Length: 269
Image 1 (cartoon, rainbow, N blue to C red):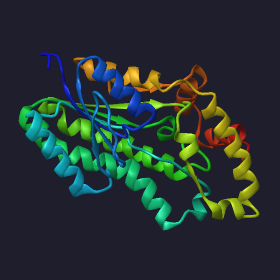
Image 2 (image 1 turned 45 degrees about the vertical axis):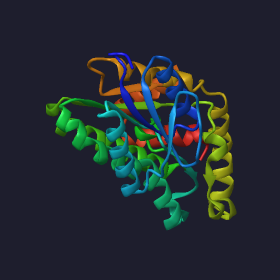
Image 3 (image 1 turned 30 degrees about the vertical axis):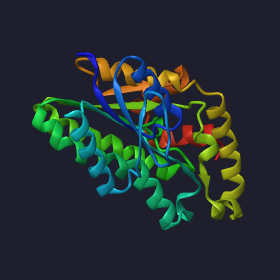
Image 4 (image 1 turned 30 degrees about the horizontal axis):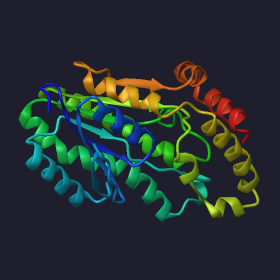
């Protein structure tokens, strides 16, 4: 291990942004512990099977990494999933799965690693949010809610831990061509509803087209690598095409009602 190598815990490392980032980071000499729900093997990535929703499992894993390496320099909270459907018809199980994976998984890892980072008086936390964490996306409402939660959590956390030498950064990707589209769980109750069903299917076709034609996940992976290696990483990085970057700016300018109108027109709902 070189003097510039960092010990990194990265969740959701089996595919998409996580796998691309883990491969780039290991290629640059960093030690990456890749967390995922299923058992995996890789020549350089040190995969560990872990469900980020399980608080005690996460704590034990972090303690194991510290015992092996002596420290954790960086945490990348990338684990996430999506459930499509009308907010009104979402089941308690769907809500718990969405919020538990995307938001509480992030909370669990941050709480597990922070005592070690505070003691060392240094560390970096990189949380994957989304354009959907900046604006509420129709028929992806609880996905947006989970990412809005990560935004607020990260802002507050940054204020609390910066004095201990710990930085917190948010990465806000737009549409990317990853396995996220194929793995999205769609609400059957919404599909079957006479009011929501036709609107949801129309919106979903737009969502899937945009994702399928999105950027390559390595673009986000490169952003993560830069944040890992920067001395003073910024709080936020939007990673998307020009149209979606502009939409973030528009959100800050227009009224709430106008923004809802823009979203309804775009997603044809």
